[in-house]
Figure: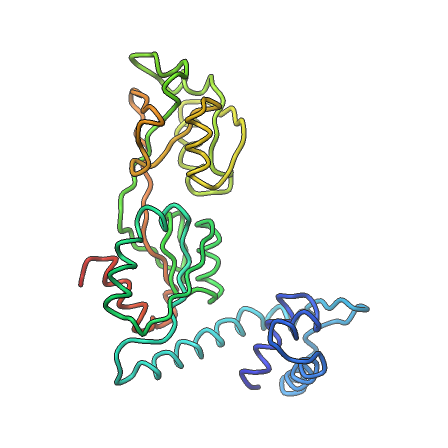
Length: 288
């Protein structure tokens, strides 16, 4: 069993076919087929069932897939560590983050990191926080800087910033004219929020549910800047991070309801961070 065969196996499983895997790996289809056949021979099991042009994982293939991902991630970490040994910090750092954090929290930190470590090649991927968790779990990203949600081993989450949320409306919204606003008042109007599966949506929805209130969703989108625009033109209310507040929206004086979320970084507790990732984490934590 070798790394090339494992890489081919994961590519075929992810892409659902030999041709697509060959395109991803920049190989010919026969070369991918040969690597899979060699892996099946080495392990003495069949990893895929061939159904015409489609391939599906066998029971043995499903068992191997997460282990193969972990082995490839460990091999990549080992290569990075050896490349960095005895030199200035270099190599590649794969970082998953949300658009909101990328716009409002990371610019100064990224500027400082690139100045301190110019040899590091940053691979920054913007996505929802829940997807960033999955990227770290699967070994596709070494580090995620994201909204923190429920975290289970082997993932480890470390808070860095408290991120208060404020209920907001357009300055000419009916709620904006009220001196005191309750959650029941807000629930009587349509909302625009992140998608229901997101950590932020759950925080907001649970706040209302604890009072026996349900939300009227006009629409959902995971782009906070889009949510702010829709609020500013009067289509709905929302809850925005304090870092986004300006004269385009008006904060509601809500009685007895505090919303907050935590932002931070997520790593895989079973993997050794590269020196580049360690340096980035040190900046996040304010250690350097």
